[in-house]
Amino acid sequence: MSDSNSYDVVIIGSGGAGLTLALKLADHAKIAVLSKVTLSEGSTFYAQGGISAVLDEQDSLDSHINDTLDAGVGLCNIDIVRLTVLYGKRSINWLREQGVRFTTEQSPNGEKQLHLNREGGHSHRRIVHATDATGKAVSLSLINRAKQHANIVLLENHNVINLITANKLGLPGNAVLGAYILDTHNNVVKSIAARIVVLATGGASKVYLYSTNPHISTGDGIALAWRAGCRISNMEFMQFHPTCLYHPNARSFLISEAVRGEGAKLILPDGSSFMHRYDARAELAPRDIVARAIDNEMKTHGVDCVYLDISHKPADFIRQHFPTIYQQCLDLGIDITKQPIPVVPAAHYTCGGVLTDSYARTDIPGLYAVGEVACTGLHGANRMASNSLLECLVFAERAAQDILRKLPSLSREKITIPAWDESQVIDSDEEVVVSHNWDELRRFMWDYVGIVRTDKRLSRAMRRLELLKEEIAEYYNHFRVTSDLLELRSLVIVAELIVRCAQQRKESRGLHYTQDYPKLDTTRPPQNTVLMPKNFNPAQAINTDVV
Ligand SMILES: Cc1cc2nc3c(=O)[nH]c(=O)nc-3n(C[C@H](O)[C@H](O)[C@H](O)COP(=O)(O)OP(=O)(O)OC[C@H]3O[C@@H](n4cnc5c(N)ncnc54)[C@H](O)[C@@H]3O)c2cc1C
Image (cartoon, rainbow, N blue to C red; front, side, top):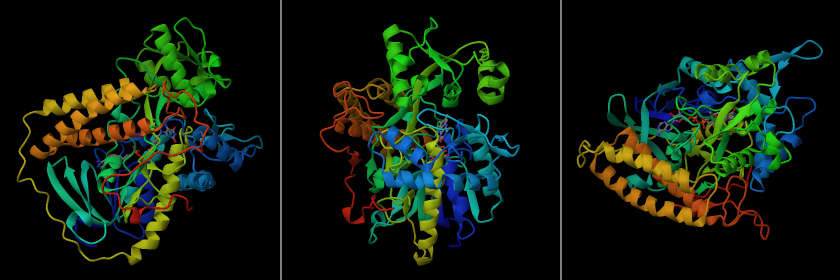
């Protein structure tokens, strides 16, 4: 494809998933990578802990597989788990080839080797990291490589409005053909044609009032796929990170799980520890257990936060292992070598998403989903720490394998995509509606659909969502699109999908905890929650069993 708005592959998202895929395809195809704001602004950049992979002699693939299955409470797809774990070492090697410099140490026989951290849920040290700023190292290296590749066009400040499918253009079949995009820098809507479109848009944690995620995490890819006719799965499993820094001047700053891995204790304001009362693994219990314990302690004692204390470790050790956390806290007047860190839970990771198969294919031909936007079956009911960056790398490679196989047979015929029609809309004079609805949505999602749920609260949330949906649809039909409006439109869809999935699950499992059904349902085999959009075409359904 040759003209400037036409590409072999359009990848929506410049995080770990999107850029890995772009680099794996670029020697063979013309690629555009879109980014809603700047290239680095995504969860990948902020990842601290690291990437899980079996590299230690004492460790084994089976152990990593079993730990992942344990965390997922019966809902992981074992073939997908096996595949992901198997691709671990090569994924790390590939990142090193791209220039990522992970933290190393001297082995007992004097050789340089990767230093491995341990995190909650992992029974071995297997977290490859670049001190406590792994995501930054990964993100900057991949951006650097992508900028150097002649076949990759990087488009910042491009917010996708809608996917264009054959169906929507009245053509036969329902393959994806491109997308409408708001160029927020120049305030124009463009259309882009593509033979393949990939959603690598990250998660949806911004649907909650408190979140560790950057602003871009508004679930746009999930909403785009749902509207286009893809099935969405397991949205009730939203992960809350137990330890987000609680400080009026710090938004969304995470205190990595690795701090607990190195022996930090969770304590109440009076200095007493509590995690041993909830789980034998205490601070190293899986995140959902730790988050619920903190939530419960905060409610029981009426406190605004609890504390994470690592000050018993030598100050040099703390500064060396956690330089970013140390500095960020120090800037706020908290010296973590001497004082405990105030922390609260916050929405962190979207385990569910666009249903994909083992090659990251979705229900729409030509549309792939890679990274946090996807539901591959790896995480089941709960993601184990540091498995998500690994998932981005592995499924980017799998998607690349499939796309490279398919591209030669895909049509090069130029498709005329109609221009975006703005004849019926005007500039908004009521931006307050958007900002008000943003706040309202995120607040009731936090209060009613948060760490602990009930049927009543879910119904309340659904009633409010119905009203918001109407208001937003009306607004969308009358006013010129803005980024805030597009994000709100995504958030309201994602919120509805979370509530619908949560309502269907009549048990507590993994990250989904409801007071009405506080136990696992052991009367039948564990079930994934799969939602079908009205325009879902069963004849196009992917097979998620096949690896
Ligand atoms: C604070 C924090 C710490 C974490 N620590 C770890 C860790 O140690 N280990 C681990 O494995 N995982 C960790 N995670 C999770 C992990 O970072 C993410 O799951 C992973 O980086 C997601 O990568 P991604 O490429 O799917 O999405 P992101 O990195 O979030 O990238 C999404 C991209 O999509 C673009 N985009 C979104 N919507 C649109 C749109 N409408 N139009 C155009 N572009 C769009 C964005 O601009 C962005 O470029 C952490 C997450 C956070 C928030």
